[in-house]
Image (cartoon, rainbow, N blue to C red; front, side, top):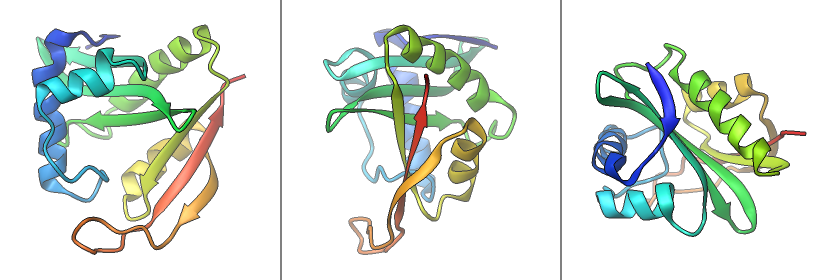
Length: 156
């Protein structure tokens, strides 16, 4: 497996992976499928993108991670194929993401995780992200209250 910068050509596979995670539910606040064009603009080469990397094996994208500007802060999003989670892909993605963010002078990275996403909360805790705020009443568009936890990691 290799970790490399994402390119616009990766957008279809990245969108398919994200849409699979959205369809399963429970681990992302995204509720609507994303087109490859939207994924490309929002995560790969849009004006708010800081960095985006993919984990690729034999031409298949197994996961991806992007950091972009949101409300003036660097926010991270991580997506790993549900069939390959808990195999170290997220840690490898973050090692590259962290180095790229540090090289760009990013001091702090923020993550917002659904409060009912136990694997996501555990993942960001393992990386060293610390809780800074909670939104216990955060609800999905269906009205289901899931809550959100906001975390921060200082890189320097």
